[in-house]
Structures are given as C-alpha cells and as structure tokens.
Length: 616
Image (cartoon, rainbow, N blue to C red):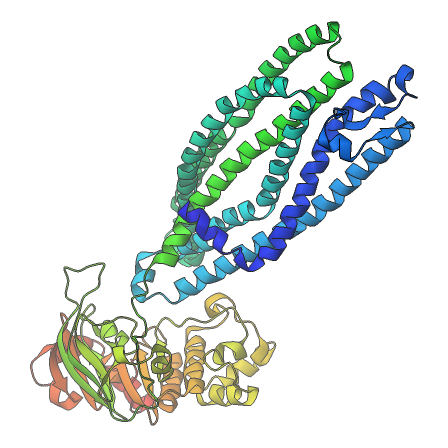
C-alpha cells in the first residue's frame, strides 16, 4: 500500500482529468449494464410476433419499483424504441469510452513522466559513492524498464480497470434486477476465484522484481559489451560475451515465463467456475420456464448479463496482477528516491563569490565507504596558494586523484577539512563552489552532440564567437574547421569520431570557456602520442595561465617547473619541494624519476621540444 500511495501521489496534479475520466467510465459501465437489460425485451417482444404490438415494459422493471413509478417506460412501437435504445447506448458507450480512455492515459503518462524526472534528478545529484556501487546499466534499466511497467499500469491498464469495475457494478445491478435470488446463488463462486487471485498477486510482485533485476543484468552485459567492443575484439572474446548474454537472457526468459504461468491461472479458474454456474442455471431455468414463472427472455437476459459480468471479473483479476507487477517494479525506483544524498548544501551554507587566497588540505583523512578497512588518505597537510602550480605525484593507488576530488566535493573527508580561502568546503554552497573549478582528465568525456555544444557545455549562454575563441586558444580550431560541418559536426558517442589529442583539446577548450580560477589536471596527456601531446601541452599552457593548478602526473618530466611537488605514497605525503630539491634527496621521488630514466632521451627531447610543461 505504501508503494501504491506514493504512485498515486504523482496523479494529484491531474485530479480534474482523473475525476472526469471516472465519470465517463461510469457512463461506460452503465451502458454495459443497459446492453444486458435490453436482451430481455429483444427476445420477448421484438423476436416474438405474438407480443410485438402489445405495450412493453422496457428493462423488465416491476410496476411497483420506484424507477418504474418515476419513469414508466410503456410504449407501443416496440421495435422503434428498442432500436433507438440500442443505438443510443452504444453511441454513448463509444464516446465516453474514447474520451475517458484518453484522459486516463493522459493522467498516467503525465504522472509517470513526472516520476521519471524526479528519479533522474535524484540520481543525477547522487555522490560518487552511488555511481561506484550501482552499475550504469542497472540504473538505466530502473529509470526506463521499471518505470515502463509502472506506466503501463497507470495508463491504459488503469483505464481498463475503471472500465471493467464500473461494467461489473452495472452488470451486477442488471443481474440483481432480473432475479436477485438467482443472482445471489450464482455469485457464491466468486470468493473461490478472488481469494486465489489475491494470493497469486503477491507472488507475482516478487516474480516481477526478479524479472526486472534479470533485465537489468542483461542490460548491463549489453552496455559493457557494446562500449568495450574494441577490447572484446582484441581478445577474441566474442564467444565469451555471446555466452554471457545468452546466460542472462535465459534467466530473464525463465523469470518472464514464471510470471506468465502465475498470471494465467486466474482466467481458466474463472472460466471453470463460470461453467459450473451456467450448468446449474440451465437446470434451474428449465424447471422455472416449465412452471411459467420465468420467460425465455428473462432467462436469456439473466444469463447474458451473468456471462458479461464474468468477463470484467476475469479482466479485473488480470489487471490486479499487472498492478502487482507495477508495484514490484516500483521497489527499485523508490529505493533511488529514498536514498539520502550524501553531498548536499548544509543549512546556511555560504556562496563562494571569488577565489583569492589558497586551497588548504588541513589534516585530511579519507576512506571509501565501500572499503572502510582501507585508509586512502592519512593526515594530509598541503597548501596550494592562489596562482601556484602544485603537482601530485606518486605510485598508482597512492591517493592522488582522490585528494584532488575532495576540492570540488565529489567526496567529503572523514577527518580534517579542505578549505578554500579559509572556509571549509562543506560550509560552501555546491553550485558556486564547482563553478570555480575546471577539470581536464585523461579519460575525456564528450557527448554525442556538435563540437560547439560540447565546448559550450559548461556555459550554455556562450556566443558562437566565444566558443570559437576558446577553440583557438586550445589549438582545436584548425581541425574543427576541417570537419564536414565545422563547429556543427556531430562527434559521435564519447567523441569516437575524434582522435585522443582532438578530444583532449576540446576538453581544454571547454575548460577555457568556463574560465574557472581553479584548474585540476588529471593525467591529461598520459595516453597521447608525441605529436598530440605536444599540441595538448601548448593548449594547456594557455589554459593554465593566471590560474591555480593542481596537476596529477605520472610522467615526472612534465612537472619540473611546478611551484611545488607533493609526493604521495600509501595515502600520505612523504615529500614536498621543487623538482631540483627532490630529484637527489634519495626518497620516493628520486626512485620514481630513476625508473623513468629507462627512456631518458625521449623525456629530454620531449621536454625541450615542448618547453616548460606542468600538465600530467
């Protein structure tokens, strides 16, 4: 009920549409009941020549009934009246069904669109821990596939539920009006149908959740294989991936078939008990017609109404199961909505208007919640003055990237504080803080959009002239103009139509356009060839001018001109100083430098060709 109430909450803005659709579906149900009641006069009067000219009491309402007293339906032209009644009933039913169905679907689609937007925004604002612990494909599956199940239930299935519910009420009324005693006897079988249906619905909810999880796993295999298609081909692993996909698809097939097996039980159950009822009714009617206490038309109208009643009951049982399926799918969706955001603005957080003095890591310690046994950073003390270039070096896994990621608050420290101009970043509002920081990483992410839109991503209001100026400063203008549509060229998923150096220069242009005073460079040239690295280094020189820069580097030849080098090892800063001070100190930096001297001529020639460089 909790999940159902939360789903219904999203329909509140559309209550007028929903209320009108309910009224229209009530008319549909009433028309369905009138259709059943018209059967009696058709058999007794229209198809009976002896009584065709006699006055007819339409709908077989007793003379002393209040409805009859208020509206005495006595007429002489039987055929005209019944024909007009049939046409009117079906016309009203068709118009009301069409309009009501549209309105309910409008409410359902709108409510689920709002829910999907809320889930997306909630996921979008989650911290880095969330994305580390939740595979992208699984999150995508919940936002799309799980919500698709909910959308089906809250749109045309909800319309069918209202239609069948009101039809069942109207047909039940018609059955009771025809012969209430016989109706009570006939409906005694309903509990034998409804109770198993309710129990099956609970099992269906669990089966649906398993099926959705299996679909998410299949989606994950698909996403990983397509994204890493080059790796798959290079290792000749097509058969392995095909088998992985087949295994996940088989699990999904079994889950879906389990749902079908559970959901399909209700229909034959209702049909069997309906057949038992009809057999009993035929025996009863035969006796009553012989005694002249019931006409053939009366019995036909009763049986038709009863058979018509079983159809909505059967449909409602199936609809119940589909709603259970939607509730099962909603569990993961609401898990995302209920997950607390770890990185949020504190009450009374201040706006960082400008960066003027320094970035200080004040006795910072940090460990990932997913691996609490490992201390990633331990008692870090480091200050980066405004306008300085500070390099972070050390072996892989030393904590360099983690330390840099604390500045824009991708994570919060466990102990100590990261301070900007003396203020703890946790006391600053997130949006203005991140406006002051640009990041260029080794794994550049570009969108499947135009060159211009990728450069202007961080500054949507930028003019085309500003975009072009940033591209020229990043040395990207030359290759952009050679592209088929220039700045309006689509660059493909993750910029796959570009080389590594071109992608990096677009990322640098994007950072230049943002014009943030703090710059983080995370191994921005480590995967490039010599020529591409030379161009990117020149672009980085333009980017770093008059900015405070934190450089993460493995190539020590690129950090010689840094104002300060901090050497990290196992989460601690073990050395600080300039290149000239550290290279002969006999510590970690010297050891790393000597290891890289396996290619001394390459490093020296590269350094002299590029000039002073401080990018990774």
